[in-house]
Picture 1 (cartoon, helix red, strand yellow):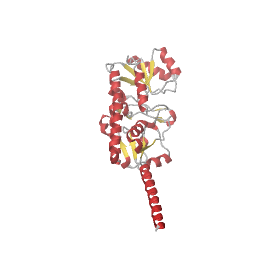
Picture 2 (spheres, one colour):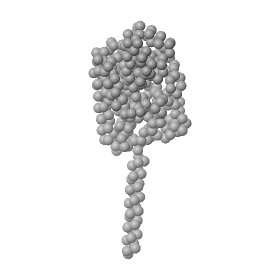
Picture 3 (spheres, helix red, strand yellow):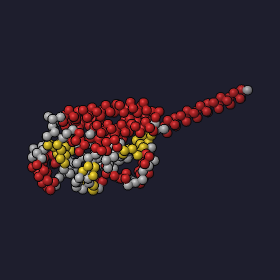
Picture 4 (cartoon, helix red, strand yellow):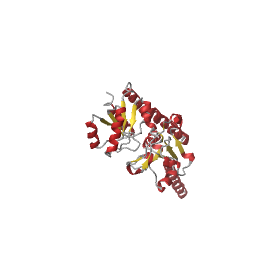
Amino acid sequence: MKSSLKLIFKLSISLLILLMASVAYTAEDDKLNIFAVNYPLAYFAERIGGDFVEIYYPIPSDIDPAFWKPTTEEILKIQKMDLILLNGADYAKWTKKVSLPYSKQVNTSKSFKENYIHIKEAVSHQHGPGGEHSHSGTAFTTWLDFSQAIAQAKAVTGVLVRKRPDNKDTFERNYAELKQDLAAIDSSLRTLTKNFSDKPLLASHPVYQYFARRYQLNIQSVLWEPDVVPDQEQWRELHSLLNKHKAKWMIWEGEPAADTISRLQTIEFNSIVFDPCANKPSEGDFLSVMQSNINNLKSVFK
């Protein structure tokens, strides 16, 4: 009798251990594995999904995610993800050239695709290890209009809820907090730039189209890289442009070279950084980068 009870007890303990292990495994295994084509979407997914998601973001920090090309190994891993978050607006053209499961793809800007900005003319150029490329076609830094960033975050929330309805309350609560943060950025920018729609500005790169439209800014662009001192032809083009567009400020994606700043100062031209934060920053996160951008803009809109 005692031996039978001992056997039953041992079996019960074993079953309990197996059950606990199964629950632990299921909880971990139930995480949604997500790939995002840029850092803003990865950040949104992480904020909204919390502990219920695992983000795969292999893009090196020195490459613009819009022009990054994954290796065969990376493509195979992306194909196995539960969700593939796309920016839309012709962003990351490589996604059209490889076989990705259609059912896993989420075009986060689909809700406002009728508001895409189409670029009629563009010049091909090269920067970084990504090779030559052009900014022709559709403007793709959609999130720099923060009302659109909110729409993209909402699209991420919707697909997470569909995939894991049991976690709906968590996802929607996290989205509400993220939406509040993005709306605060939008409000700050609208207040800061109000009444400055006639102020001529230059951008070092044609990536601020949605930003200019949302916040009613008069921006024209050149094709300068922060870490490359412009050649004589680029300086001549700048002077020609300034004869028509009387700007005194240039908005840069990153900190420009000291020699470039010095030469711009000789013509009483100033520089500030407004980082689109397309890639993961070395310090801080998406929100802290945008707050830094706003602080930088205060010099322009005194």
